[in-house]
Length: 407
Image (cartoon, rainbow, N blue to C red; front, side, top):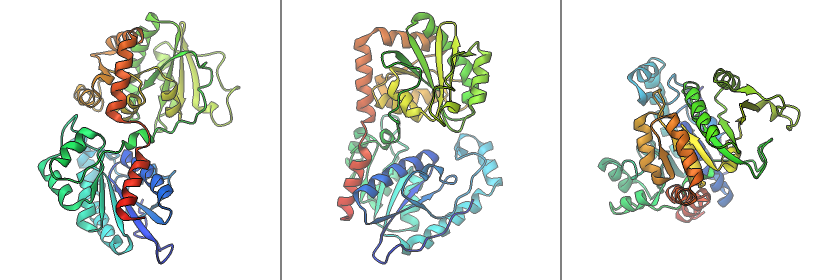
């Protein structure tokens, strides 16, 4: 898909902000910030230039998508393997990159400010091609995992008016390097979007174990392992229910089919007749022995809100669960995404909020141990909130930006 290079002005005195984001998750986070900016500064006109993909993450937010976009075979994960990189090159990545650079230069005279959301490449695009007052929101790195390189710090120090990292540890280290960094919150915690409606068929007093299998196709190979972990949990404690959050990118039919191969069966009193229009088709109850499992698509925020503990093989979802004070248990899978190396990095990020297990049986036992130990549960919940921060960061970022740009 090719977007518009630039759009006509909505008014002669309009002050335009261009948000540059280089990733699908970054599109969503930039959209959350754009929404907060729109509430705080009504006179701003908000444009977004997604670098990876078509910018689907911006759809729900008050922004106009500009620039040049195309969907590549890797889906934005070209760094995971040389094969993915080669496929993107064959599909025209170099041509797309050149077109995006040209589009940014064409936009220069039409905007007043830039917010770069993502990694150092988003920052590079902003200062190299636009040369406008710049705020950088570095979502890709945390000093809990790995700090920014010297060259990255140099570019932030030279080109940024304000840097808004995802945690205070990172912000403090950047400030010691002479960078105008300030921690006011984590955009991830404002992108959960709970509906406020309870999960059908689950009473408020039931213990809910949230299952976060991830959002990529690797989920399908992880499901048998997750089912094994659920078996261990159900055998150890019967008074609970599982709630699995299925991303919109996945097939519920395929998920249910895989779980049926693991012994789960559709419940006779399923939800189709009791749910509101549009929801029934996305929620299915399965049973296995005395255990109950709700498979819900599009209810991620509601699953997190209802959960007591989360069993996760996900990236952002695990972090968001920890930030809400839900202890997280995780174990590595056989695929190329949620690996032992990835889990180790996530453990460094979340600290004691996450219990890292070697495999599904150990993960099941870890969930039971956390449920039985109120002191450990409280410590894990507190650590998660401290590491990730609570909701409201987007509004605080918008306030900082509005002060900086006097809007």
